[in-house]
Length: 261
Image (cartoon, rainbow, N blue to C red; front, side, top):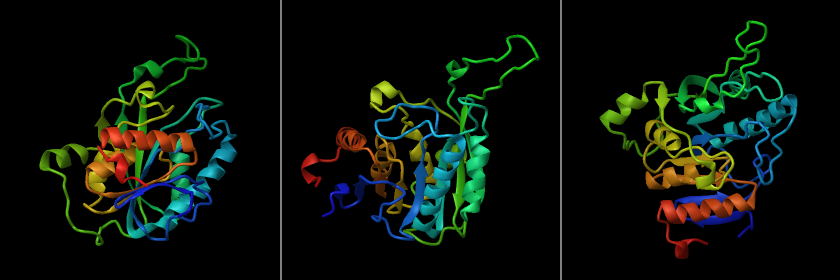
C-alpha cells in the first residue's frame, strides 16, 4: 500500500498528499465535496504558506477547484466554505472571485448560504473612526457557496435521505446561525464546527454517498460523514493534521483504533 494512504477502513480514507498532484482519487468518484480551503489570511498552519499574493492565491485556487470538478460525478455537488471578503493585505472580494473561478472551471452555480457565526469580536478595525474619510465595513459572516457539476437533480446513489422535516425546513433557509469552532479545543488554527458539514451532508447527499474534503485539516468533515453513514475521503498535506484527525475520529466518531490500518 502506498505510504500516501495514511488511514483506511471500509468507509473512510485519509490521503496524506498534495491536492494538486495526488492520484489517489478517480475521475467521477465523488458525490459531494465539502471543504474550507486556506483563506490566505496569514494563518499559522504547519505546512501551508497562507501569505501568498492574491494573484498567487487565485492561481492556486483555480488549480485545486479544477481537480475537484474532475473528481465529481455528473450529478455531484460542491459546498465551498469561504469568507465573503478579506481585509488583510488589502480589501479583496474572495467570495465573488472564487465563485467566478469555480464557474470558469465548469461548475454551475446553485445558491449561497450565509453562515452567521455571531462573532462580532472580529470587528477590530473601523478605519476612520466616526468619520466618512475611510471607514471599513466588515461583515461577521462566511459563505457556503453551493455548486453542481452538470445536473442539479440527483439521480445516482441509494436514494435514501436521512434529513427530517424540521432540519429540512430550517436548513433550506439560506441563513444559518451557529457558532464557530474553538482553535484551542480542536488543536488546529482554522477548524469549522461539525454542524457545517453535517448540514451539507444531510441536505445534499444520500446515505452511502461518497464525500470528499480536499483540505481535511482536523477531520471535521470526516467525523460528520462517518456519523451520518456516508463514505468519506480526506486529503491533507500535513501529516501532523492527519494524526490529529485520526485521534478525533477515535474520540468523537468512536472508531476503533484496532480496526485502522
